[in-house]
Length: 234
Image (cartoon, rainbow, N blue to C red; front, side, top):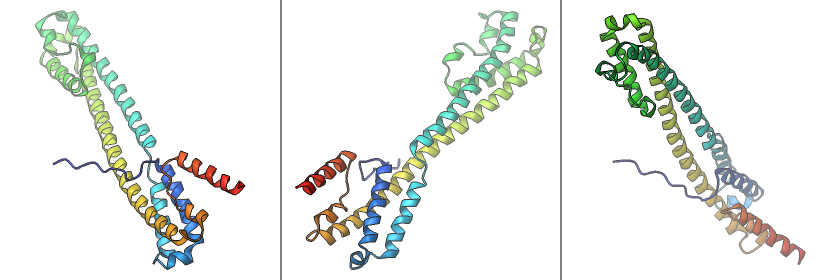
């Protein structure tokens, strides 16, 4: 059974979560005497800050996508080199048999440009196998172990680039899930901290109460600031 994807508990960017956590930690440190009455002392605040640092250190999706794009580009380069090596042999086969003959078709290189990665890899291996079977007949057009070995090598390089690309795809999936899990854990701790802070100031200081409000978006923060400024002017 496929594991269900982890869902984010917050609907704002990870960078905003980190900034909100650091801002609330600053307020909690200011109000630490009051927080201690809820069993939330300096040790717990230190643990919270360690979670923040751990979350900040995780690679974001831009980094992961960038790595993935680099490996994909290298895979495309390897694919083109393999196609070039295959065409070098197939040009010689066409000279010997023509490109409409059964012997030419046996190599299975038709529509090579439309092949999937797996089809291209199998095609390269088939070309090597069939070329070796017919090498005595193709030697006069320059098919030899050297250009066959070139295809073998490019097949190996292409397969390696495929594996690296797939590894990066898997790494990205794992990293995204880890980031969501860590973000959710940090968000849960932020909610606890903010609930304590709001309870501390609920009846005595509305401004400090607002310090512990978790904003869902930048727009929420802008509205709160405007409201606060308006009250100050009054």
